[in-house]
Image (cartoon, rainbow over all chains, first blue to last red; front, side, top):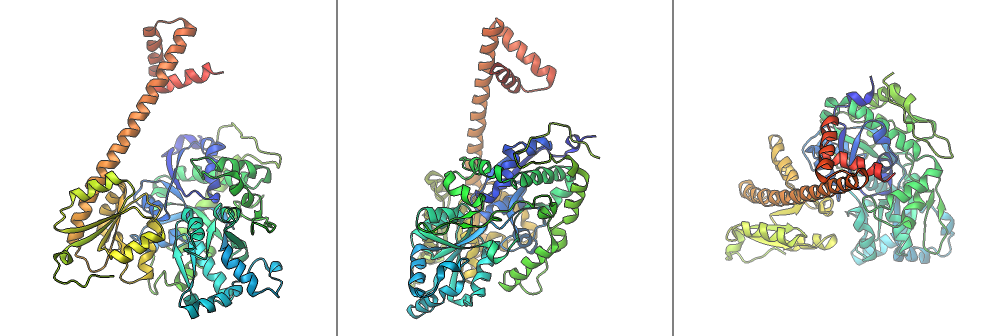
Length: 383
Length: 201
């Protein structure tokens, strides 16, 4: 028996947001991994995280690339009805960064002229203290953008501010969609943001921003994007989910080969995906974090990590990560005391489905060599 | 700022803010609502300027295209201010999942401010669903028509190839394609695509 013959729903609609870390979905489609595992997938670009969530909840999308706190938010019914969404696979880590406006950066530099701030990347939020105090006297606040309330970006921004001793009352965090972030920074509507690629790179390229911190400096190795889908969909289509996990696992592993990263960047430039020049997409996929237009890029080898080479634990959802996210959501008052979720953290980050699937099929993953991969055309068999 | 004019009848009207970039779609929706009951403002602003609009107009309900990138911003409003609009789902009961699904599928969603009477909101939602569904229908229809045209073109091309290279009559070319389709349980467009793929080798 082949897996292809038992797939309940081979035609899938999957939602994504046009960000650099949607790469696993794009690669699975463009490099034929979905096809290899018997799936025919249509990728649907979404304009907002709330709409992506609502479409998964109502079944318009079968699955989606989700922010890792999103399935938890669905479980607690935050801005939506309580809904059981599970995350059987981690898609990416370490893809976010904090960018400050060029004006704010210049101000900080002047304020710390006698200190060696240049060697101080990753930048501590302590450097903002003076500006925060000045603005307080003037009756306003530093305004920072995050992409969604229940996102790693939001909680990472909070962690970064707190680590440098900034009082959260003294700054405003506003929600702005990723694609509008650079425009808002250029217009002076915000003083900085925490967002994923390609937007940090674009802000530096257009000389309006300074990227001083990546999420690797704040929450190293935390899952930022996961595959999310309704628990009922998983229960009704177990083989489909297995095929989906395997196709995306292969795509994530393919992306760990550095020789493949540039090709991934090229594919992402397409108008169906990021619709953005290669200049803005390639650096963060090649371990380069642009800092400022007239300063050298910073080497961040694990920038945008999709898998761990030779160790599949990198894509396995983990209850510990889920509990850590719940803790931050509670600290920010997003999850109220005594509130109960529709699903437990163990059920959301369902590592058992991942382990069962990999145990059955990991031998069918085409081995990769650093010179590039060749797709196997052999039929898939359930061992 | 809230109007202090208590004599004005408009104070009893439900204030509707419509966020929609497509002007025709916006007009159709606005014309369908009875203006004696509603005070409607249409905006196509995005980003921070949309938030200013919300602050100035203080709507009872915001109707927004589900494909608008500004949804995340509106979603976050209920956490910033207690009078700010909350997603419609936060007013719906669990059994109203259907209403939410219908809204999503018709391509629209809403944000409601606490004090407004839910029954009055329901009729606005009904109108929105009706108008937006109609639009969604037109969009799908256009998509189908485009697809049909493409399929026809592919079939024509494959037929032409058979006529030219296999020296078949037009009728025979079509018949042989139809037979292949029936034998293989395929659509004739797919057979045509296969033929053209072979032809390009």
